[in-house]
Picture 1 (cartoon, helix red, strand yellow):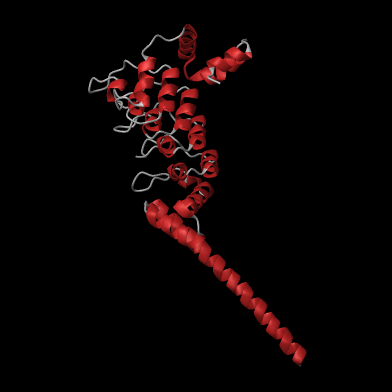
Picture 2: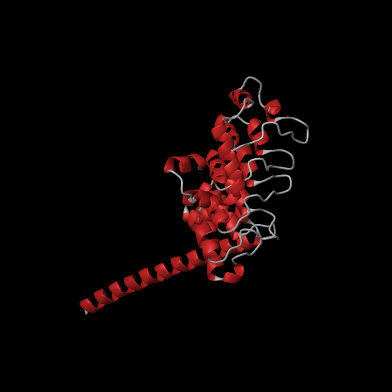
Length: 277
C-alpha cells in the first residue's frame, strides 16, 4: 500500500514537471509569435523590448532571428515590408547578424526591393558591418545606389568613418568619386578626422580638385592645420607613374577588376600592387 502511494506520488511529480515544461514551451512560442507580429507591423522597439526582457539578448538580436526564421519558413513573407518600409533583411543588416543575412538571402530575400524606404546595404555600412555589406553585394545589391539626401554606400561609410567598409567597397569596385549629388566621398571624409580614410580614397584615385554644390574643394572644408588637411595638401602633388598606371588599369576593368586581375598572366607582386594588397 505504501509502495503504491509512493509510486503515485512520483508519477504526479513527473506529470507536474512535464506540464511545466509544456507550459514554458507554449509561453516561448507565443512570445516568439508576438515578437514577429510586432516586427511585421513595424513596431521594432516593442519587438526588441520583448526579446531583451524574455531572452536576455540586447539590441533586439533575438527578434531579428525570429523574424528571419519565420520569413524563411514562409517564403511569401521573405520580402515583407513593414509600415515604415523595413524588411527582415534590413533588420538583419542593422543588427549585424551575418547568419541572419545569409539565411534570408539564401531563401530569396531581395536586397534591391523598389518599394522599401530603407536600403539594407546602406544600413550595413553605416553600422560598420562589413561582412553583411559584402554578402549583399555578392547577391546583387547595387554598390553605386545613391539614396536621396543620403548618398552612396561609399559616401556613407566615409561620413560615418567606417574604415573597413570603405576599404572593402573600394576593393569591390565602388566609384571613388560618386557620393551624394556633387558631394564626393572625399568631401565627406574631409569633414571628419580619419586620415586613413582620406589616404585610402586618394590611393584609389579620388579627385582632390572636385568641387561640391558649394563650389568648394575637399581641402577647403577640412579643419585647418589638421592631419586631414596635411594629407590633402600632400596629395596635391603629382602622382607617381606607377600610381597612374594602376588607376588607368583599374578604371579600364571597372567593377570586374577584383575578378579579372588575379587571372592575368602577371607576376604575383604586380597583381598584389593592382589589388592594393
